[in-house]
Length: 473
Ligand code: NAD
Image (cartoon, rainbow, N blue to C red; front, top):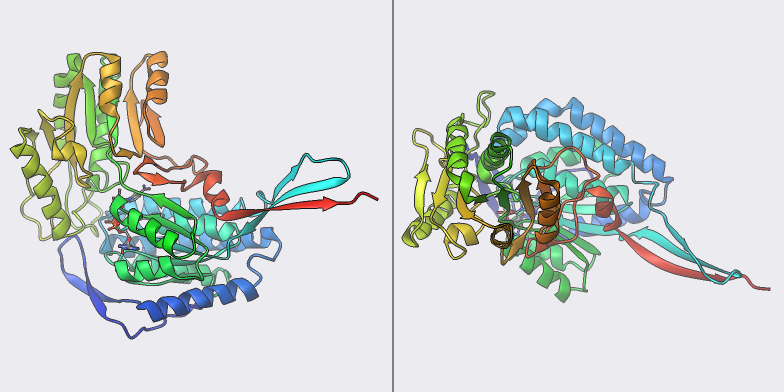
């Protein structure tokens, strides 16, 4: 807070390394009083530092310096991220940190580009739609890719001229602190990016604080509902919600099966399936189902599990013993419902942390627990179909609509699938996000409201004032 570490008087929570479950630090929990101080301090900084009122290119310049510092300190940031989260160090340093820096540059470029519009009115009137920052934005992030999630919230909020109070997950709190310290070093005024630590009650205090003008949340659908309720009950704050998913991988018989298998396996193995967009429901045309399952078995066997701080590790631990048990419960319930496990289906032994085998389940239907629920682990369910319509119907999930993959060489079919699938992102003959930050991400249905990334993310951090000037004589 205010560019400094402020110790609260609240409780402290032990924090464990997912790789071996060793408790290596404690995180202080911010109580309502400390959250209040953080929000007031951010409001004071917003009012007095000139962050919003300075020429916007100055704001962009400070953000670019921040990105440069993130790159300069990339190894340290990546090490911190790898130590405390499920991100293997090789991916954290060259993937996550590099993309965080470039993403912040992307957002910096919007600082002077979304000032508003001139409206068509009668000629002796001037109608303006003026974009303004909200003031103080409250943001809450999950544990699965902590640095990326923090930058997706802070980047657009700051570019738009807001201050932000950010609460990272209590499971992975520390890399976000270094990110914020580098912001101050880069010349972003103290207090413009404050970090508060804590569990759900700290998050709820932030959501309900009257000094917060807008909320941006990424996490589970269940918590997203609580955030929206708190926002509604504390002044009708606008919310951006990036929530859970159960994304389909729709493969037609004419697809390049090797490419499809590589995309599907890549999506399942990335962060051991602990990704909101994990393509965890394979829906494959019957004629090629067996061939694809065989290709997948080979790819899913090629894993290098281990502590996240080793360069040789590419397969992540599960974030906690609790989360591993949740995966086990969903698998057990699915088997009870008649599912057949054709690959994996248990823990990877010989590790101190919780590691789960890449797993494939067949003989499942829409009622099977692993098809219905977000597993957040490396678990793929396989359903097959004959006709295009049947495939489209299976791809549709009753609750979630975050992302989808479609694999076919038939352009017309690919585009029909794109229209039919109710999801915020449809990838065709590929899967997963790229460094094209201009492409927004967000969910339909219970997968969310609004977008992260893209121009839309900056727009959602601005509110619009209508101005009508009468200059008739
Ligand atoms: P979670 O919902 O348990 O927690 C997310 C954050 O909310 C944490 O910081 C937590 O402390 C906080 N929180 C908990 N209760 C709260 C409350 N009542 N009020 C305010 N804040 C509260 O989610 P998680 O387990 O950390 O993350 C996994 C989930 O995140 C998955 O469902 C995943 O799909 C989702 N996710 C979505 C996206 C996306 O872009 N759509 C990206 C990453 C993760």
